[in-house]
Structures are given as structure tokens and as C-alpha cells.
Image 1: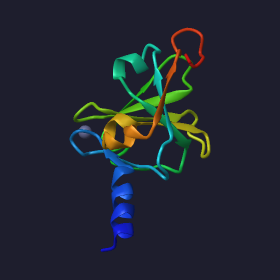
Image 2: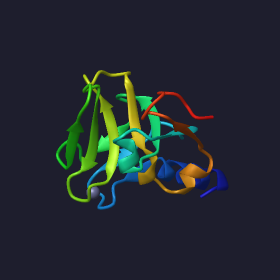
Image 3: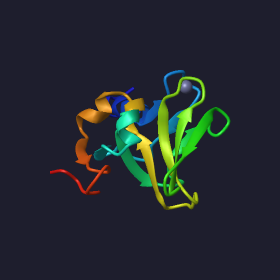
Image 4: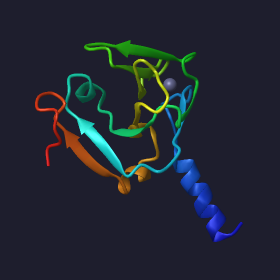
Length: 132
Ligand SMILES: [Zn+2]
């Protein structure tokens, strides 16, 4: 295998995340450049780091058969977690229309993915603005 091929394979493997038990897998269409660390009442509890993609472009397996969903507040999204290990894997837009914003929790990926990601703190609890 050439150096080029092995680096492609490594990149590909890093774009695939799983919950802790492996029942849910999430495959990104491209490497994330930014992630959002939000302090709203639900994000601060899950500790998620969100990268955003268009709904329909992220390949997810084990969902909905191995997941549970939580819909709250103004019901604009559904937060999804593994029914076995409880890890929050993503959120889906409601209604679930293709192309809408879709959040993926980068905490379920190889920690190396985060090394090249710019993490932005978002004040979802109060001002609904980035804190920078
Ligand atoms: Zn799991």
C-alpha cells in the first residue's frame, strides 16, 4: 500500500464514529472544521461537541432500531442516544427534511479528529450567540 493510500484509509477511518457499545455508527461525508460547544440546558448535560451537516449526508446505522430519542422545548429537533450505552450520537431536525441542519456529536469519534477542529463556544442558554 502506498503512503497516499494509507493516509486516505486513515482519514476515512477517522470519519467513522460509534457509540461506546458500537450499536450505532455515524459516518461523516467530510472532515469537520468547526464544532460547537453549547451551554444550553441539554447540551451542557450531554457534553456533546456538535459538528453540523446537511440532513441526509451523514450515514448512520443502528438507528432507529438501537436508539432512543428525546424531543423537548419548541420541538425543532430530536436528540438521539444509543438505547444500550446511552451515548448521545446526534440530533435530527424536526420535521426530518433533507438538507436541513443536522448535528453530529464529535465525542464519539477518534480524539484525533478534534485536533484539527476549531471549537466555538455557543451561549445557547442565554444570548444565543457565539462567545468569542
Ligand atoms: Zn451504544
